[in-house]
Image (cartoon, one colour):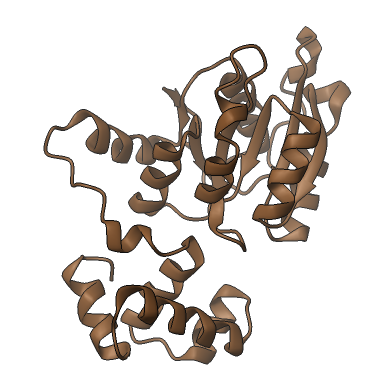
Length: 244
């Protein structure tokens, strides 16, 4: 596994004196999937200078449907995939692109790039087929290196996150998949955790950059899927599963 995220600096801090990834003639076609346009723009500006980095950004997407359409149309070598997306999250993208990942001649490989370092998010996308998981604190140069490693078939993780994967897959005592929790989308899980922590709807909306009405819709969906009646039952349910 590759040790790629030792720094706490945001993307954009790579040393211009470092040798360019593209200098050795390496090339990789990449699709960016993230629901924040400004973040996609920043990543594109940082790593998408093909002659210097060897990375060619061939498409972008902001939600699950867009992602599946763009990935299917462009068939990139690597997809940088956010975990939390409208339409079902990164796990849903992986599920719908399973045949592309399994293509023996031209496999599409996925590298999760997320602000989340929650164990359940990491395990969820790795179970779904992603080849690695790095957080958005990674430097630009390390991200380029991670993309090429994933293209070559390596598994790449930020150091702390690698432990989650080892614990989940190497231990015979790893907890089973929670079928109730798996019914929820990634966004619904986020709302669930915040509700269980006592956040008001307005606070959740501000933190997740969504409307209060959308928060209400997510809460209703969570209560319906889990067959719960109110937020107090929801809080007890989440606490019992140590999600708070």
